Length: 302
Ligand code: 13P
Image (tube, rainbow, N blue to C red; front, side, top):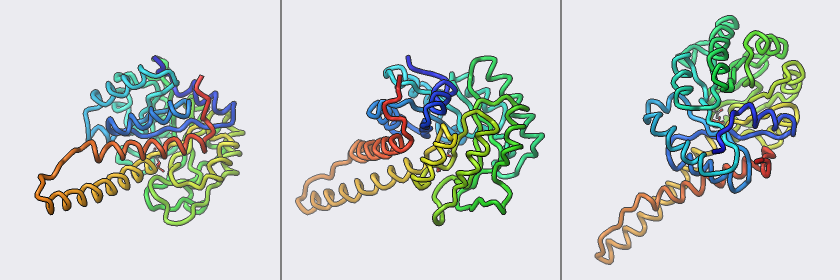
């Protein structure tokens, strides 16, 4: 049993100047790729699920699968709820045995409308009380992260303010803080501006591990600098999705060529789902291993 809280592994990362990757799982193949990469790199891991996954699959089934994978290995792994938007959703994941939750109080449950600072504090504090009572780590968010295709700059006013961050951590008691520093979810339109100086300023004021959302396709040099300045958890989802899509497309192109050959030879076509998903799982694991190396957490499983 290697299920740990994210506070445990992320605090070690902050002190050791590396970051733990938090990778999104949606099904068996993604979860296997994540755990497989952690084993290969002998790295601590955070395996996370967003609340929208509840619309795709029964969370009890997914959680059971994730727990079996975690139980079998000796690297430390935390199971984390990514972007929980309501108290009720967080409670659901606590009941599933997750060891870490995010309450994204920066936005209303619609995921678009900003909450005021006071509203953010209110919901975050409520989650902290409930989660800490059962020993679960809480990640809060202050400032608004860029959504897909959006550019977050000083001018847009969505970047995290270091003084307000210090007040937020004190007002809520969160264990880790997601900060808005120029990264966005999904793909970037051009080369992003990542405000690594802001990471340093926030980190000096709050003293707790900071979280980089929108880690995919963020330039490696910015990721490494941000880690040096206090980022200790980096979220990765889009990198995995792109690897999956590309591998599936390549497999289908290859299989269709085989089908055409079979047709010409008058042989029945073969359909094997595993011939598509297996290379996709391998491709996803490779990108996760690559990110783990950039985050500096290889060999840090203890
Ligand atoms: P990416 O879309 O950059 O992978 O970000 C994922 C994320 O931050 C999940 O919370």
